Image (cartoon, rainbow, N blue to C red; front, side, top):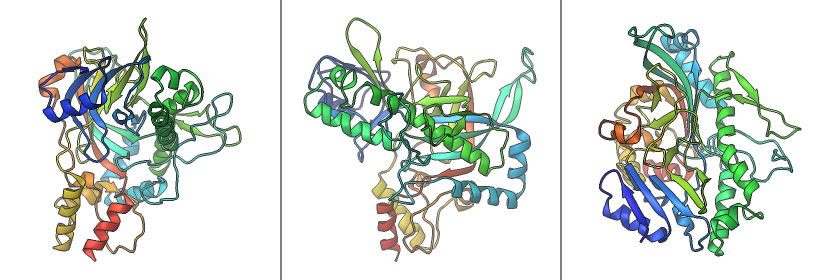
Length: 425
């Protein structure tokens, strides 16, 4: 059996699941809030070290959401606060934001994200659409109370300041899906990771470079689109150097950019690849962010001086948990939503949800909007920092909790929405 390490006791079900996909030459570090999705089979909060020269690696340990993550930029108070103070401006801004973000959940024919195959310079061959590529994507305005000094260098004068951020959580879309299919096919043919990723085209080194940048590029463009929708016209942007020559584009310059589900080769004599399943890989991320449930938002980390740029090093393969524990299955949540709407009660926190969240659903003739499952209690709140901050290397960091204010999120997947409408009608 593969070597398993855990900061806390590993659940028997997770231990069995890891043992079924890892080889004797592999090892895994299980972080707090770890688990395996019952629906997709993807592992969450597990850092794995995989041999690159041994065959027989199961593709089932990889998630299709390659290199997904979170990016954020700072928003001036003079831009954010006028939108939040006036209910009419808030509602109009939320409507504009939702309309500005394309989503595969609203249109089955739409594909977002760049293609995996590029030209000889790793540039796109054609234009592409930035948007939501899955049911857990989000982009919008978040608020925080950040403890810092009024000016740099004034130690001992830290106090709480109101801060605002544009935050985007999304993946690589078409590139990630194509890369997953090709890598899965190569591994099922008996290829090693070195053979699949360091030579040839199945998927090959160029594909790995392209998919590693796809999600970041998608999020950068989404942040720019969200900024325009919220009338934040002073956002710093940069030209996308990997865009097709015939379709130039610009994206936001992120203050924090965190990548999840990263696959990279480690330096050393023995060929070893590290895969951060459902956790943030600090070695390729700029800053640190972890997710709480949808209604609570995100948790960011800063240095003692309030700087978002920090370097995390810990014994857990330099990784940080990203997702929280799943509380209920989609089936249970769908049943709960249907029963609540059938009784005419709707969402138990309807005022909060309608004021802060919006989504674009597929048009199936529905007379009422059904909230995405994340708003019905799918995941727990962040709860590992109180017990494991020191072991994870963030005990000396300041915690900044980002609360949603004006946020566009992915709607219910069309198949699930269709099932809900059938039950309601």
